[in-house]
Image 1: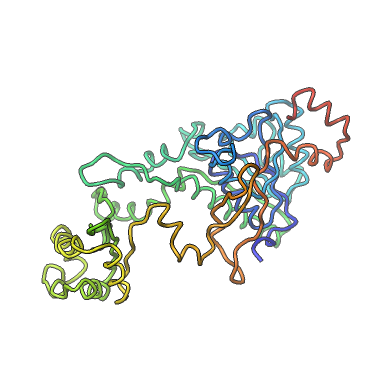
Image 2: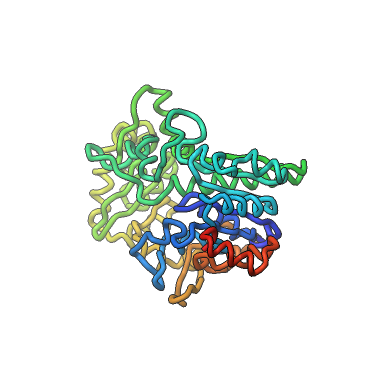
Length: 397
C-alpha cells in the first residue's frame, strides 16, 4: 500500500518553510524514513509561524512535517557539515532548499555528495533556479505569484491584483520536487545510479500560467482579471443566490442546456446571444445578468439540488468549515486524526492519493526539535561520549 512504497529508503531533509517540507512529507507518507535536519535551538522557521497554534505548537509546522524525525545540526560549522556528509553517504535521497551555490560552498553540492554516494538522488529546491541574474535571491510564494504574473490574472476586473490564498507555488514546487525524486529513484532502479534534480518556485509559477501564456502568445493580448470567471468559457463563474453564491460551470453547449433546464429558464438556451460558447463568452455580462435574475431569488441549497438533479456541474460556495463538514469530505477520508502532544484531537489533511481503495496510514506526528539527534548519530557509529562532545561544542542541539 501507499505507506510501504518507499519503505527502506532514507531521506535526508535539509529544507524549511513550505515547499521542501511539503515534498518530504509526501515522501514520508509514502513510507520513507525522513531525517529532518534543523538548526539547534531554533529549527525550521515555521516552528515560529504562530499564531495559530495547536497544543502550543505552530499549526503551520504541524501541517507540513509529519512522518519525519528531527536532528539538530549546525551546518555553518565544519564538523556539522561533516556530519551531514556522513549521513548523506548512507542515504537514498538528499533534499535541500538553500540558495544556489550555498550547498556547494559548504561541500554539500550534488557533486560532493554523489561523488561519495553515486546511488544518491539529490534534489535542490530554490526560488529562481540555479541560473540567471536572480538566482541568488530568496523567494516566497506571494513574491513568486507577483513575479510570474499569477497575481495579474487574479482579482475582480478593475480591482487591484490579488494573491491566490493558498500557497500554490510552494506546495506545487514540493510536488514537482517529489515527482523528480521519484523519477530519480526509478532511474536508479534501472541503472543503479542516482541523479540530481532541481525544482524552483519560479518554474512552478510559470508552469501554472501555461494556459495564460498560450493565450497571450496566440493573441498578443494580456489576460484580464475576471474574478471567479474563466476567459475561455461561459457560464463558468460564481452567481449570487439569495443566501450566498453558487459556482456554475458549463464547459459546452450540452451542459449549458442542462443549466438552463435545471434553473427553469430554457429560453436562455434558445437565445441567439448564447447559442455557442464563443457567443456566450462575447455576451458574458448579459448572460450573467440573465442567470442571476433567476438565482438571486433562490437559496444556494435549492439551486445546487436542482442543477445536480439534471447533471449540470455546480457547487455551493463553501468556506473551510463548510468544506470540512460536508458528507463528501467525510466519505473521502481526507481529514484524519493525528494526535500531537497537547492536542489529542489534532487532525490533518491526508495524502490525496489512494491505493487499493485506501489512503496512506503512515501516522507519526511531527517531531519535537532535535528529538532524534542522538539516535541518528548512534546509527552512524557515534558513542555517547562523542555525542556529548558535539553537543558541548554547539555542533548539535
